[in-house]
Image (cartoon, rainbow over all chains, first blue to last red):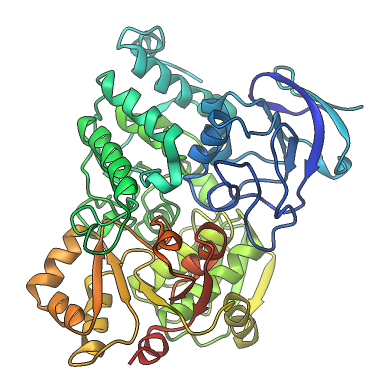
Length: 127
Length: 394
């Protein structure tokens, strides 16, 4: 699948898919990378080293710092794939250097799929 | 995107390494979102201030910027910090937390940022005008300035707002452009909204439904700025709503195209269900008002209710330093303190470490706070209007 590069880089890993938007601030623990939002479909799961797939961001604009923080704390996802990346996630991934692509039909990606990401070309491959 | 010769030189590092790095972030965002050029901003509001929110990585990032001599070019305010910056010891904020929080404040001050920490800059001396381009980041402040004032800002991430402050510009895309300020969904409200918490419940419900769309409300007969602040804050928290219009009330509502939109109806039933959903606890250990930061009108209302009374549990009302100053002058602070409550400035329940302070169940009248407290502060929540919450503690 071909999308738009938000932040460059390449990555390979298991997809962790959320059908719901993610708010990083208050949604993901900055020290552990575990989803802490009550009632979120990914609650209790870690995003560390996975390819995190979700439709779009939501909630607090402090989310950019949380993305930067989870990267510095080595619990960040290996890459992010969105339907639509809004500015909060975009700022975070650019600052943190996490590969990120949007404009992808994420309904085609299933939780646990092995993905190969080439953000420079906007490519998402299901292996 | 078109860059001027001067801007090209900034990218080449002529204005220093920090400017080049931050300008690159703005250009990157502009390229992604199809901006044609950079535009000057009238003011900035920077989020990502609490040590609890940004942690050690964020603190190091800010200290690095400050140590390299970064200075802001326009009036720049800050989001709430993780504690009352003056009264923290008395209110029981942990010492090691305070130490880190004060490091963050120093870094901001060194960059020339006004260290007034508030999510309501428009009530504390940073008031943009209609159609002014600004770069604000706290989600409820973004919603208020876009919707109620009619100034123009995207939802800036903390670092991109800081970049706009230091560069004095932002990329011209998204909500800076009139065509992107058109509503994409109509919300027909038939419920009679009374208290500020009713507006919070409406906002929470609508934000969940519409995510990042631009809602156009009909059926809201009247609302003061406190109620619009509560509505916008809740929608920005449960969804990513950065702009809304209210027929007859907000400045752009008559100017946008509101015909032929998909519709959602909200009746008393949805509001009631939202109250039920947001109530995960019973019997709060602490009641906190002021999310977003309380106006003087809200503080005076609380003071009236508490005059001569005694509270069973702590009650806080969070606000900006400026509004607290006025509340002190009016004697509201004394009344609230005598009753056993506190006016807490510079911070709020969401960004302060209340879970480390032994509180497990928090009473709030804010849809936004009710959205964040369970995840971020591990709190059970009692969501109700201010009258019920206060009367429960007398």
